[in-house]
Length: 228
Image 1 (cartoon, rainbow, N blue to C red):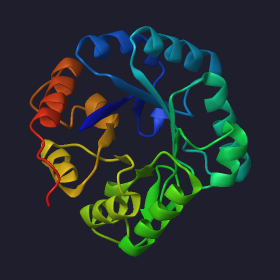
Image 2 (image 1 turned 90 degrees about the vertical axis):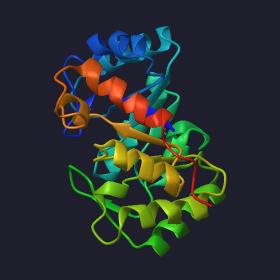
Image 3 (image 1 turned 60 degrees about the horizontal axis):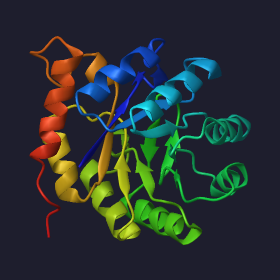
Image 4 (image 1 turned 135 degrees about the horizontal axis):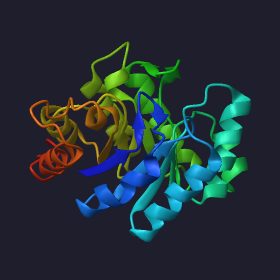
């Protein structure tokens, strides 16, 4: 399981994001992301430069809600040169903005609001994952623990069926080792955590960012293989 550390809290990039990249990279984090709201573009440019300097994989998750703002966010992702762009549901807009879909991971289902919630049944998720593959997307970004209509793990298994071997990222409200292990067993390849680190909710008995990050990495190492 890959841990994607998000420099975000409550679905917004934190003001001091660039100051944390080196600290988490020193702990062994190799996947680092941020969202398209919260700080100005020059800050994001410096964040990307820091991530690149540490040879980590760089992610932008789109949380814009209108067609116009999503298009702007996708264009910003291209301009920033991030490795992977997560979120949104408009593959046509993503293809226009990015020049292709080989680094794009759309949301399957019906995301809405901010913080984002996810509507949709397992059948909806599987269908959308298959459609993303057919369009040439790299994979999908599933808001499993933000689900309003279905069991989160049922959605993960559905997305896994729809994607085949393509990567499945789970984003939003992951905050325990038990959840990480359950996601791995259900077929997720990676997950994002941001707020649970900064709020201290992943490891409530530990007060430092270091303690939270190391416990998450340990949960990744001990995660089971996907159940047959």
